[in-house]
Image (cartoon, rainbow, N blue to C red):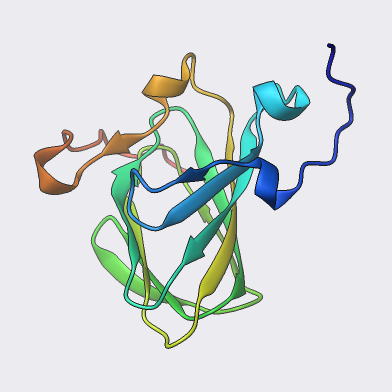
Length: 141
């Protein structure tokens, strides 16, 4: 059977992934909808949970906080992230998210462009799981 595009994907169709800490549901991907420039999903972070530190060597990451109170560490610098706030994380910047509130946090994420292969797109840096990233690219202003 051939998948029809464009395609609406329900959250329940995206498998739960906890390899990086909190629950991640990658919803719009090349296999699920024919995406060619990136992928999008939802992070569901319970109070006290976190998404472990990592970086993306090929992709920028865009996040939008839907609900909850988060902190983000960007190359070791901590900032608050609240509902209705967005953040763009440059290529190679180490980052980690923590739910510091008393309710579940929901955060939409999008990474693009795609890495050459899925296994190259995410490099863990906590618990000795990966090397330090190279300097992140200078952003044109």
